[in-house]
Length: 305
Image 1 (cartoon, rainbow, N blue to C red):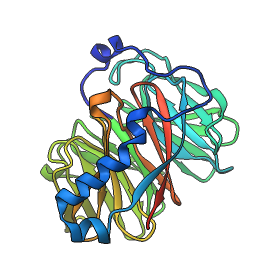
Image 2 (cartoon, helix red, strand yellow):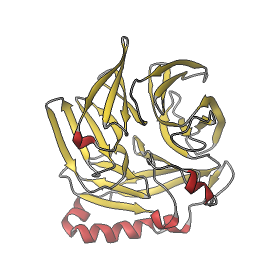
Image 3 (cartoon, rainbow, N blue to C red):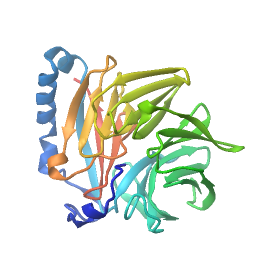
């Protein structure tokens, strides 16, 4: 999620409309050619040996500033809709539910939120980051549950489950909070985490992306932090790639591949077309990316030669 206000962007007209899967825009059809050029510029060995490609599956239109995605127990997708400014309490935010083929199963599966962004599922609960609080919903019915306020939170953003606990990042405070039975607790804060955005639990490590420096960070404990890759300005979501490596989105319009050795290759760049690449999530070999503008959700498949 980007940190500046969305009000100025609201003047941009939507490029797609409706709620069903749409055809890929022309610029996305040429994304692979751009990826090849980027790979060649990065070096023939890296490009040939490690970078996958993205094959578009579908695009669904008709969302209102979509930002985050989470996997439902039935295999469908939850999509958060900020529906306004990302830091304003307007009560217009909602959660949509999408089928695996991009069909909108329920436009307003859950409502009553201000600016919902990252989400995660643990057990029978969907947790949603909403400015300075986390709101829980029954994952099966959409019934609203507990609201968990986090003192001092400035811009809660992405969420994940790590080591059995729900975590939420705070982009404004460069910190991560744990949700525990005793209440929210600070997992940590770091100058390296300036503009922290994406978080992803993966076994004994936590992956973190940052917007300020564009880092991909691996955290194993308070005393064990490594910067895996740099230079992905405005980094947003992060996902694991089948066969090795990572995908990282930069919300202005880029999707990057990071090899196990830390080499960054940009696979897609839609910034010139005004299509944002927000909280990227990878489920198996399927990549789900909400596009705050123009109000779409795009699905890709990760493929390798």
